[in-house]
Length: 419
Image (cartoon, rainbow, N blue to C red; front, side, top):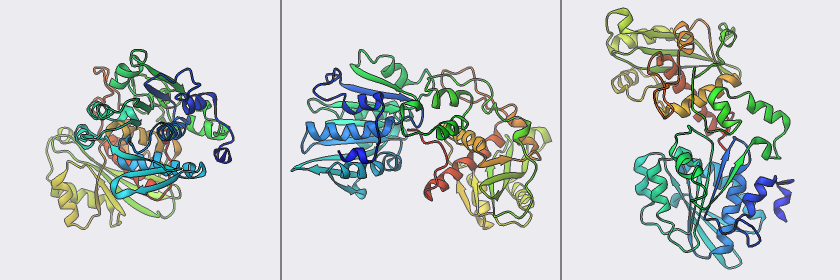
């Protein structure tokens, strides 16, 4: 009954996820549940509640796992929102952060839920040796196949079930081809969500999210479709999306740097005005176009000229530019190595541009030029970028990723969560 105080109602699809394993459900004999579809569609929360309820009423004293791209994501997206709900339902919850473990108990029964991050191929070793009665994979399409398959091999307890949720990616993605397209032979219940399946979203919120994406990201995150990325990466970046430089004093300054020797070096100067960061100037050096190369010291001289005596709050730099980072640190610049996840970074740039959190001033001529040329490759079955005209795009991507990280660390999450 307590759960009703937190939620006015559940949609039919959410109810299906909540009780698919119950004795009176026509799906109780399925081994797997897969939920995919739009962002903010309510699939993550109802799946999390259902997973713990199933685990508690079917087992006692058993081990379970919740897996995400990182342990931090698991705690933020699953565990912390779930604990107050479980407590309202009468469960006792003890979070042991140092052990990445949640103990759930009530009425003399207790189960252990461990958290794992599957960010890359090496993560598969983290879950070896466990014996599990069930696993929930949050954002399954963002994890490497090797990690998921290693985790699945740990589910050796009789009656174990598998729980997957994700947002769509490329239609050639291994999870789509091996699990969603083979759902019948996997004995899986498949539930496809749209934002309209989340009754807690107002019309205003729905409209705001629809404006945050375009192109393949709109098809995937709003319409919930597994589609291939094609054409320009940022097709919405027309002339009116490039403002003039802002007036007035800036609240803060920053730099973003993509470093190249043979390839171009691109550095953007950013100013914060109110809720927006403006890329107000740039240093862009293409050795092929100029006919000669510059040393790190010469690049640093031009970057300092770009700053013009301003003191940046941070400099987010290409993580592969080791020598350049060392040189900047010696000059007292507060350098941060950038997150170089290309696909996720592009999503963050798209969201930040459409929401107005970052703006590219029209005086940044090489950035404006690259926006008109930056395109998806048609030559690969996976999402990939044509590796040309992408250097200003990379420094902007580094900046958007760092900006979102800072906002998240302050609890100010403005970007679309992949729920």
